[in-house]
Image 1 (cartoon, rainbow, N blue to C red):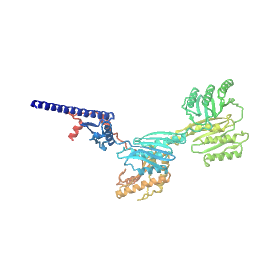
Image 2: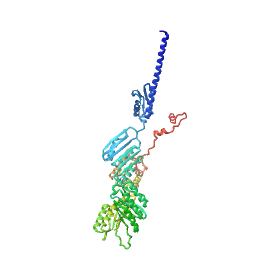
Image 3: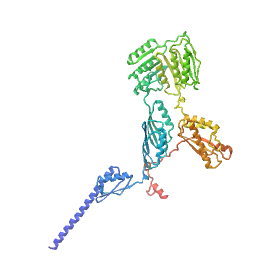
Length: 636
């Protein structure tokens, strides 16, 4: 073979080898680029922009700092769906747990007849055993299901206050759901009545920590109204409701709208309840209220399906007949109307007999006027003593003849109506019964009207002049926590709780002061308060602190003996550390030996900048393009 042929064959093979190497390089690059782009695109689609992707041949490398172990594992799984999982090389780091934002601690507390369930996430530092014991104590040992998880992160400063408040509230509500977080407590509950609803809302709002937002949703079932009552009247040109009942929200709106057209200007309430005698209740009341408006005065009283209409004295007979006739024609069939046009007073008529009972603000009841027999007198006396107090009732009524047969029943009815008032009077005449006075119950006027409508027939007229006084309301009239603190301080002005020398035994004068303080705290309800014990500087500091602690605890025990709720009251001894006078004089030392009642007010929580807010702030650049923070760090 000639030499030229050998070189030709060798050159051909070399060229082919070079072409294969080049083609293989392009193929590997194509595979690497394709794998890298596919994995990168899928990670971006899953919002894993923190992950870095690189390739080396068939191998795919994942790098970067994952926010959590779960995120790292998820990135590996996502990459494994694009290329063979065996080709994925994990070079990722996991962010330090200390740099991760703490989770949101929260608890859902559910309570029903079967027991209590605790569901949520709490700090690991929470004493779970103590928490369950507090829940059991607040609920009289109700069974508790602990479904809580824990996380080892720092918790906000307000978390203990919010959790303690939720546990205290749990003891007051047999059926409730309480959602607790560090900054907010939401309470959803069902109570038995509207009165209990108002009392519970007031109580929960008063005892809430100042640094925790409170959301209340306390509901009560619709009351059963028996009889279903409505009383609308116009006196001296002023329209008002003594009682108002409706079966639906729509019916209430219709009734109030009809009253507004008849001249009602003041705000009125209408109770939505069950027991309506007819689905046409709203229609019937609209017609009757409009009739009173056309007459220009008088009253209309509904007691279930019975309607009593009283026209004003002096109403022309023709107008009365027209209005009543039209009303009778328009009323739904089930309703029965009894209309009365009172005659003009006869000046020559004899003096009308009366029965009058008055209730003073101090609780004294004076009964005078006329009764038809000695037996009736004894019955009235016994009934009044049962309704009020045997020592507070004074009867000066005399026996007279010629009274109506229904007189005893109407007298007892009047006394029953008087018991709804805080103070006032009732007057009974042969043709009418009137009730006037003050009350601390918003619903008293409606309750009296309902009661009188049930006891008196439609032919008998009654009048009400009952005024709600907030100061008499046992709920709305409660003093504020600051007022309670001031009242306790006033009790100790000029005198103080003294102890036997060197001991924690309260002397006789101090016991009298404790009685007064206990009465104030019973009126105040559950408020967060501290009993602080203080001594002078005589003796050793440690012994003084121990003695002051014992004295403060003794005061707390005395309150418990007087049946004061003390679950929100703490006792603490300060010894000689907080003097308010000079310990170098006897008078000063006497002043420093004291017991102080002080409201516990949460410390204000400073607002802390979140990580997101810090990132959103503009970065100030230093003189050489470095940010100000880095420059400062270098200087430090």
